[in-house]
Image (cartoon, rainbow, N blue to C red; front, side, top):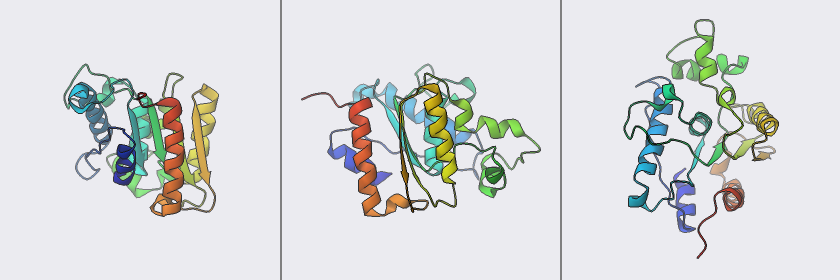
Length: 217
């Protein structure tokens, strides 16, 4: 995501990349809590960094896309906030940008993936179906969640494109503004290709102008 941060910093946006704990160090919900902790930190220090605290977007690809969706759709959920600092500061964001992130961990395909099991503390679906639901962004969605931009390639064999299809459908059902770039014939990490990267930047710019505009002048 660093490339996108640089591109949009050049346009006048304040950008930041964050670190979070991986599954080997701490399972769910640690990574979500770390993401929300970073949002609270940036909002609490908005004046210091020149950030508009009412115009924050979150974006990520693959696992980072999943965390961005979780952060965007679980604003101020106590169990996902963690105790990483700036308690009382909202972790709500105003826009979510998802690059081929997992949306529903309860599907048969997702349940069979070792990386999903590791993320959930080695728990199987049979042992704890509830945690699979809690860690699925689509189950967190409510009507007041933020506008969402989705990028996904149709031949992704790591996160099937049907995950993004399902997300778009649910967003539309709830009346949440969304834009879905379903990119034909491209795999996971498709935006490593310059042509796709430029295409994604174009649609991000368009989406931000509509939902997260820079101050005039």
